[in-house]
Amino acid sequence: MLSWIVGALLAAWFLITVVRNLPPLRAAFLRLDAGRLIPDWALFARPRTADMVLLRRDLLHDGTLTSWQEVEVAGPRRWYNFIWNPDLGPRRGFLSLASIIGLIARRDQGGQPQALGQGTRTALPGMTGVHYLTVLHYLSLRSHAAVEATQFMIMAVRNQSVTGRYAADEPVSSIEFVSEMHLVRPGAGG
Amino acid sequence: MGPQPAQARQRVTVVEDENAALRKPRLLLRGSGKRAALHSPDAHPAAPHSPDVVTWQLCYGGVPIATGSLGSGEEVAFTDIDAIEPSMDSAGFSFVARTATGEAAAIEAICVRPPRPPTRAESTARAKWAGLRDQQETPAAGRQFLAGTREVTRTVPAGSQTQTRSRCVCVYQHVAVLLAHRRRRVREPAPPPRPAIQTERVR
Image (cartoon, each protein chain N blue to C red):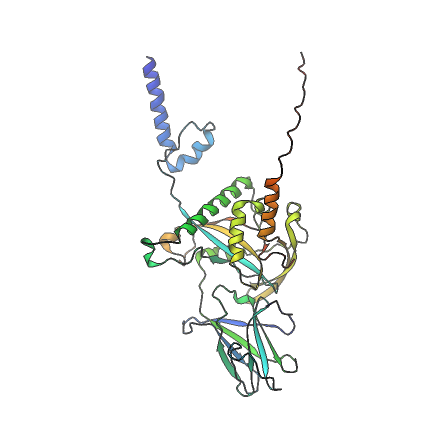
């Protein structure tokens, strides 16, 4: 009798696990399963479904603010990259940084709406974080002499790898994080 | 090269060459009304200083990136400018032309450059986060990292014309300063643990 009860319990647990891993129901189960009893049945890490894009806009020495421009981390892609791709490391490094910055920003956002301004709500508290500083350092090194200060944005763009960077239709994209404006050279301006 | 004073500086009209006939950005100068001869400053470092000569300077963000001179003669002249990079924003170019006596010369500058269509990420960012909030006061959380406030000019489209708006924004410290602050904070000894609060169980 006991073995039947245990078997029924395990079978129910298995069925709930299968249902929980259906993408439309995942969020609902996540809310209900406070004790994390139902496993996330992913044998491998979930694949990234959006490209993370780094953008910057600069404040020039004469007070001009430039438009947002995409920063190509580690240069453009080449035809031979499917065999030899030395830039893969820096690209993966940026993807990792961008994911963590976005994750921290969403966690600290607390569901409150974004204030449209110089940076997202979490930019000021996160200013001394390693990930923020790494991206800022990279951009500071790549700044023209005319740039006094810079601001960066991390955006998640879906379907870009399929439809390309220059597709005319409106992409499904979301702004993950916007930094504050920072000097690109120590002791300059102010 | 530091930023130049804004006196007599004029914005450069930037035209994108849709037919991609030009591979290098080109500066077109016209309206001197005198004989003109253009040359690269690198090729001719000692520009002639006769009374008819007009010296010009192309700046990006107030920083000179190319200089040259117009002699007497031609009304229209052009030169390739290698210093214009594809990533430079068209709104940042300005131009100064002066005669040998130091007076501003009435010369129109037009920059023709290869087109750079916006990527979908750029289009989205410009549409969704075009804003620049006027910050007269520094947020309390960021005061210790503030480097200063800056007056920012922004060219925005207003109907069929463009409009220049001015805003005041907070500019925060360079990454080196932030990193030094982080290092100090990490090396600081942890604060002593609070003494345990003694509570008496009420029986």
